[in-house]
Image (tube, rainbow, N blue to C red; front, top):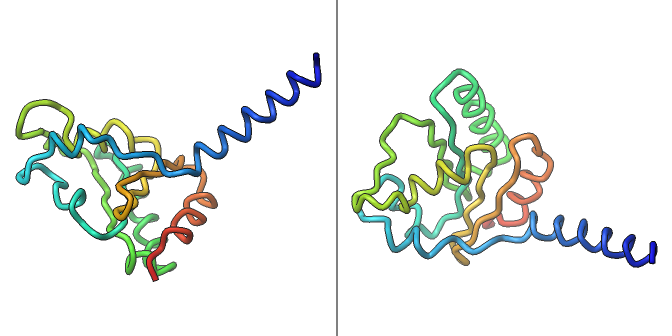
Length: 145
């Protein structure tokens, strides 16, 4: 009986790791509720992958933005990825009033993680801020050469 629980536990951990690395579908409701005049509309129709994150407008956000810009330039990811730092300025309004547009999705899903948007498949990978090794691994894997 203990072997079964051990196997289930290991399988659960493996599934969790797989889930974290595997791109997840981007919500179709975000596409449907984002108007051409909404902030970041062009991201949804771009052919470029993107690194996205969101934060309140404070000193920590400014530091993270500078750090990410340096990482993107140093590793030449800025040649393959759009970079969006959504530092909250209070303008995340959906034109249709639904709160389901891209700006609201970014604020809700990318506030403690980097969201890597894979344009070709319309999927996203979320990487915790503190896991730079995983971030670099994902960026390398999906970098268009």
